[in-house]
Amino acid sequence: MSQARTGPVVGVLAGAGIVVSLMQTLVVPLIPDLPNLLHTGAANASWAITATLLAGAVATPVLGRLGDMYGKRRVLLASLALLIVGSVVCGLSDSLAPMVVGRALQGVGAGVIPLGISIMRDELPPQKLGSSMALMSSSLGIGGAFGLPLSAVIAQHASWHALFWISAVLGALVAVAVLFLVPESPVRSGGRFDLVGAIGLTIGLVSLLLAISKGSDWGWGSGSTLGMLAAAVVVLPVWGWWELRTGQPLVDLRTSVRRQVLMTNLASVVIGFAMYAMSLVSPQLLQLPTATGYGLGRSMVEAGLWMAPAGLVMMLLSPVSAKLSRAKGPKVSLLVGAVVITAGYLSALALMGHAWGVLVFSCLISGGIAFAYAAMPALIMGAVPVSETAAANGLNTLMRSIGTSSSSAVIGVVLAHMTTDFHGHALPSESGFRTAFLIGAGAAVAAALITLAIPGIRRTAGAGGTAAAGAAAGAAAGAGNVVGLRSVQDAAPRAAEGTTAK
Image (cartoon, helix red, strand yellow):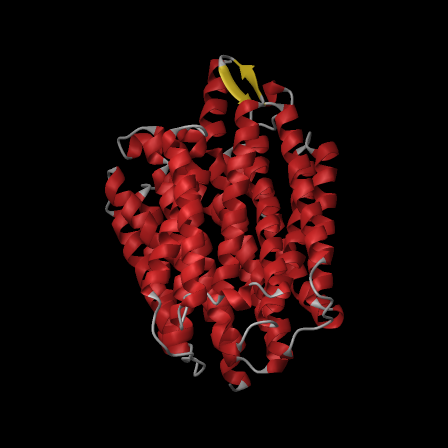
């Protein structure tokens, strides 16, 4: 591709990442009011969030495989089309069922990220890959960091339906730009789509993620939770057996169990856990009433603004992490990220009493995330065939989703059970927040240990693999700042009520 065409392609793909990040962030200000807006209970309203999580988790590996087979741009456009349709459905919704359907369709937009990474690897000249991927990473980080305050302001001054119409318009603009400016990749694997594998993976993943994400609502010992876990335990091994024996599997498990790929995916799970813990804790800490003695009393908009600089940190460090991966190898970049995340969580224990302290440790953790996630696609792409890059990126994205879902369950249980009474309302206690920080630090330490087990490769095969390093930080930034902030749904309403009661 000529240098003249590189800029528009990179800009459009980065814009697609921003739209996906904003799509997820736009719903955050509505979370406390969703039960009233949708005329349902709080437990049912949470399906508007869960549906997006489940759809995104299933869609990323499936769309990645379809992109490898039939063309990455074609499948990326289909993903954006479903995001637009989902936004329109949500914009027209006043009840639970259509909202859940629309949010699930929006969740399919998560496939844009691994597909965009793979398109860049296929299309951009080697000398432009590193800087271009870093730009995409930065754009995604900005989308996640600034989406919350932007959506909060819109929700306060306009109808809540306007948030989804904005998402639909932005999605349409990006889709048109992709159609006219992004070329179709000639790299295709062909073959037959593994429908049985897709069905098996869907059943197994939905069972597992439902048990993790809804366990606190249903009860961890309830029949529903245990039944879902049992289904996952049965279905996923059977799915793996099928994938190993079919000629054209949805996920090439033989490639996935290679040491470099397997250890990187395990590190993705743990880093995803650590990333999401920050996004769960920081907004609640910022928004709890100051009368608790440790809450910082900020509004939703103010909390978003205090966290927004973390996105700028990711923007600044993404190209730095790409250079480190190119010079020393992505394993070093991943290890540096894990160490920095650990330092960020430990510093939070001393800084959590001030809004500026939350800003400092959030930026530190976000910087570590930028380094860590920047290395992961480079490690993955350096160990898989070129014809399987989208599917491999989709599977790696799925591993991050499992990590964030697990973090939501674990940190949610900690904050739900370590509480203090505030005017008759149970709010997360200071010791609960400290415990959550220590758990996040422990996850980052585990990531560092897993990283040490990755083969010591100084650089990935070809510029494409190294340049891909810049991309995943954006995926992390978008997912971490965007989805994680939904945790305010429990604490914020109670905090507000407690303040009023006072």
